[in-house]
Image (cartoon, rainbow, N blue to C red; front, top):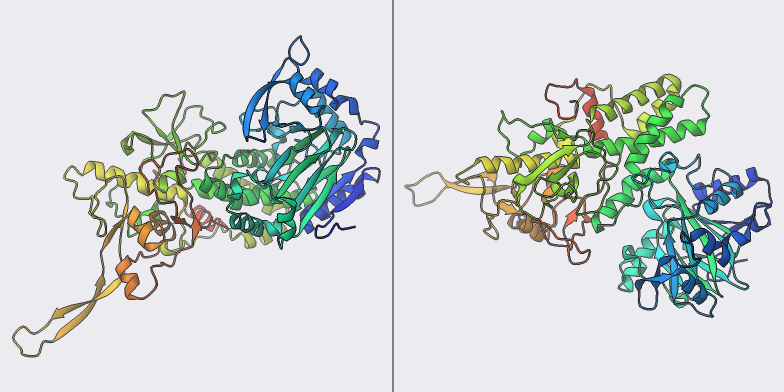
Length: 631
């Protein structure tokens, strides 16, 4: 029965047949996109409540001879700071009526607890099980991040409203609690994610900072439908991807285990929606989605045969969708880059292949600016020590980020491996899939807008350039300026008159009417009106300030840039026809520095590529000598 104005999600008993339970879970998570609760796990013969009691915690978490002497990091939620405290002291505080500390996000889980979950739950729901893409890297700390975590707290401890990392499927089971103790959950449907963000904005809170928990009165007054769950020992709560939720612990002590599962569907949503937003707000990526999907393709390709069930084939197709987006981001299309009017390269200009790191692996590389994981291609500052490298992803450099030295000559484009290998893997997967499941493959290719065998190339104006392509354009534009000792190629901005060499600029290509006198000796002047480009040049800062777009977006979409004067003449209220999306880069908010780039936090960017057709058409042409992607 619903607790108005809140809804109560469906609750299924764990004593029912497992096939029936999994069917209910699939219907709720994948089809209806609502949370579901599986209760009565404590009635299982495998259940061991003593394993999670205070004695069990002291026994399995202690690595010293004296029980309870381990130092742990807890959250002082009254003062919102982290503190180090002895495990024995923390457990004593938990016995009191109210404990000010919350031991959360502990990823060093005892092996006995991990084994307990593996025996208790079906493999479809377990941490790093057969249906989790992270399973291959469970024992590799460079790829498999802290996923299985424990949450131990007393009355009044709480978890702010947030999303599970990378939009994964969330799981949380209460393994132990004091008498009359439970956890109160408030969950919003993924369909209301945008409304929740707007609600937090109306309160003056930044949702992505994950530091605010709404009060009961605030939730009741909102127009959003929240699901309410009173979690008790033996209750497993499963959350659909992108479901916002917050938790409040009441009573005395409670012990919970939480983990996420990365599926092909959640990985696709991550690369299309979640990870681009993470890059905007400098949010670290919890899981290395790109490396995980790449490994999943390599692992599943040999298993692909005519006897595979439909579910396996569909899952493989979704992995190919994700892999296509990943390849698109690192693909460099030189032919269409040279065709951009705003980037005038000499005809004989030579673009060099990125330097391949000998034995390099991208598993531990993170962008020093946006905190995003780097899969292959990146830039590195040669002046930083090898033990503390300064690395930039391709998109950050394309948008104007740099190193602390503010000298682009110190930056070098590198790649962890040659692009020919993953491209060959992608094409081999498509070919094998077409041979085995031709009808399914053809349908998928039509929906994905993939034509690897199509010999027709799109015109340069139709192509949406990848971040790596734009980065190449910016990088070699800097190199051309360095060769120009007379500094003639650094033109002055028509608006602010700046000549900064590390800023890119754009020419206004709007056609304007110009008067030309045709008769000099006449009492009646006659003029011939011709239309010529405006040719006003704007630096990156003025592009953001006056044109509501960025240099990156103009080059990406290949549309003509119109300056402030031309826009006002057409009474367009200072707006260009570019896709709009906030690119948040305020260095004061995230303890970062906007290294020599546009420092206006209201600058705008474009939405992520949906069907990666811009990179797929490159497969239609034979590789050329010196192709930076095929070498």
